[in-house]
Image (cartoon, rainbow, N blue to C red):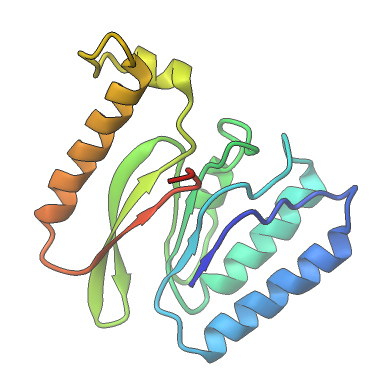
Amino acid sequence: AIIGDSHFDQHSRFAECIRLHDWIADDARERGVDVALHAGDVFEKKSSPDERNAFAAWVTKCALFAPVVIVRGNHDALDDLLIFGGLETTHPVVVEQAAAVHIVDAGDTKLAVACLAWPRRAELLASGLFADQSDPAGAALRAVLAGMRDQVDAHAGPSTLLSPAMV
């Protein structure tokens, strides 16, 4: 199952957001989903304790039946999602706020999830991965994606890209 753009925001239809996410978790469980992927924008901005508690409840509910992988979106504050990786859950919860390939158990197989959080120009430029001076951020992003592709190619099983980026 894949979801994105949850935008948990206690000032905007918060009860409806919680209700819909509960329905999504219940539906995913009933369908026998093997892994739950969240493609970012968990929150609208820096989260509040109530927003974090609501999302933690959803993640915990999903992690009862499947591993959960979450990437940071452009609305998610840096380090705001890391706490969810520390939840005590039945299945693991992986949080990626940069770029990495994570191998997760997905039913009877292992799934390679190439996670690319919302790319921030300053982070890309700081990576030093660029040779193309006309578009250094683009060159750095291409280098990151190529590195993840090499890791995914080395994986014998299925793979997917999880990112909030517009393609």
